[in-house]
Image 1 (cartoon, helix red, strand yellow):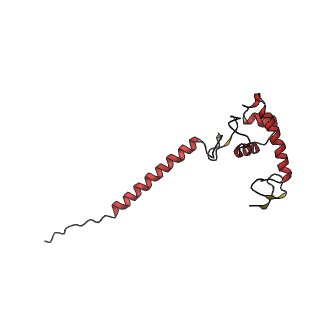
Image 2 (cartoon, one colour):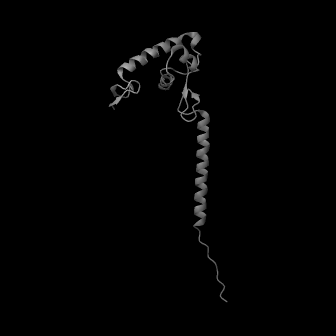
Image 3 (tube, helix red, strand yellow):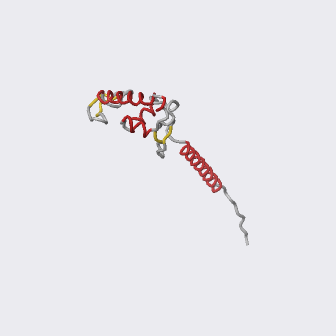
Length: 138
């Protein structure tokens, strides 16, 4: 769905859609920068370059490089040292939204939450039992 917004880079008004999140001028600049980065990475000796090295040599913005890796324009299987930050901890990853450590942590927290919920329901059940006592008629 299209909407009229200001470009996040240059503040120009443009029609944002599912394919572009910047204006035409900034998009062309991004494409030129992408081409420079890709030309650098496709050389055999640069395929194992780190993110910092690519930023240093090409002058590309770090967030722009993360965007390309996230979208799959720069593939981590071809360039193993490329990645983007985990949404939770910031560690550089190649796929998904969170790293394996954060994923494991979330799974363990969910298991703990489920066990607590189960325990609470058992306590609630046990409190609903009725006990009868016999009175001594003396």
